[in-house]
Image (cartoon, rainbow, N blue to C red; front, side, top):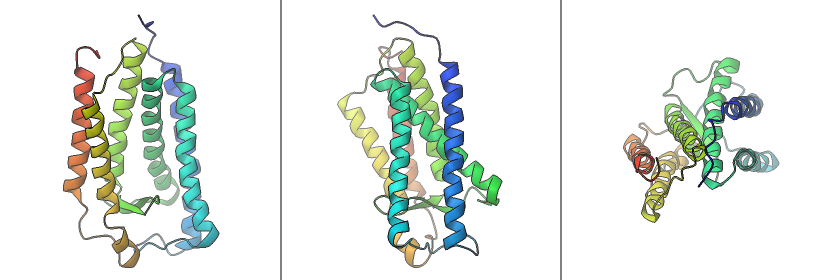
Amino acid sequence: MKRIEPFPRQEVFYLTLFGIAFAFIESAVIVYLRTIFYPGGFHFPIQMIPGTVGMTEVAREAATIVVLASVAHLSGKEFHDRFGWFLYLFAVWDIFYYIWLYVILGWPPTLLTWDILFLIPVPWIGPVLAPLLVSLAMAVFGIILVAVTRRGKTLRFYWWEWGLEILAALLIILSFSIDWKLATMQGPPEHFRWGLFLVGLFLGVIVATQALIRKHSL
């Protein structure tokens, strides 16, 4: 029988602090890049960063995921615990990235402003609201997953549930990346693929919620 532990308030505090600080580092890098490549202000079509700088930026994004995953691994005690911390850390980092950009640059002016979200393997684009909705879901599910694990319970996903979660993630990624060529040649699409995005988001939330409420999980 697993030992029941109290909710890790101190860990939540310090990991939240880490996520906020790491988000500032991320936003500072973007401020520098925009000053260099978009001196008149960020706009579409997006400018592909050339040469060594472009390769470095792609590597930095990959390193960011490694850092978040490493901190989550060190903070947890087993897979579900660590996965929960990773989801929570990623969400805090992403949410405060936009908060810091607004504090420093006054950008984005609205939550429907289009942005470059990621560069691997192709540019991801979308209105700021979309990744924030994903991050909010990740934060809630991540912290619940940690709490359930610390209570000595194990959150069990069946193989088909893992399959549906992967499908949900792929649908969300597709909604961000399907129009990347248009963003590099002309500008953002007239409309975001909200239907594709929301199907992926709701599917992921529903499957995760079902696993959480299953009686042998709680």
